[in-house]
Length: 332
Image 1: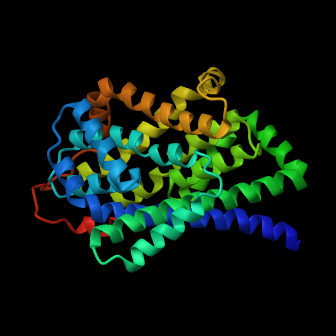
Image 2: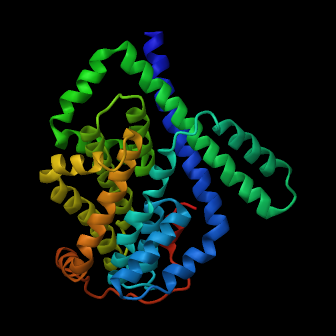
Image 3: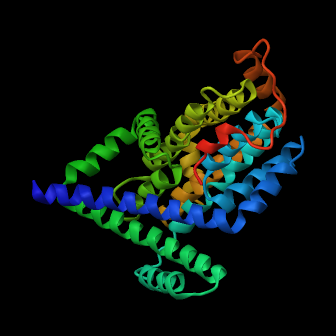
């Protein structure tokens, strides 16, 4: 029992460390690029492609599609942005969030220790704020790779010592919808598709999971991150509620469109790299890019559908405010 608990806590502890690393990286990048993100979002137009570019850039800078969408909900709620503009940006946020997966799919061995050490000493002993922030970014990256190491170790031990785990993974791999539900559940609990994808990549790197089941989990992770946005839309203005609903619809429809073609999609992804971790990261990126571009010509239809399911409130006044109370709930 002690051995089993040790394995479980090594994996869960690694996942917790990964989430902390992502949070620290996000907060630090927010301090470095917060003003740029606001400028990017404020200058966005009704053009879908430019909006996607803005959403991608903003999410790369914040390293969180959830933060980008929550910010959009706050902007729409305050009347600083139209619902249609928020949808355009949202499509780009789906692409920007894949950067973390691509990053952690690199196998850097134990080079994470120098990253942790260098970043820590820069953060602690640098007198200039820029160097402190740079040190924190390096430290955060070191934590991400350290967390991947722990998750890999736990998954490797689990696979080697308990063959039934590998068999179980293969069994559910034959039922993609089950993998999607599990991925959505993990992402819903952790509120991070990056953390969920990182865990799947760690499992893939030690052969604990095949590409098909891994893709199903990653697709489910996209759905799981919608829970927070839906919660944030409660009590908000009608356009803000539509923004939260649109994010959920995009991810649900995207997964539904890919589900019948999961086998050929898996074959295509397998040809993109000889390494499973990179294949999983590529699947995450390609899936989000394709879904976003599918919705570009459908933005108008999506906007009208959301307006239909969430009609205007009688007497509701929406105008520009310098600050909106709902934005107090957006994590920084």
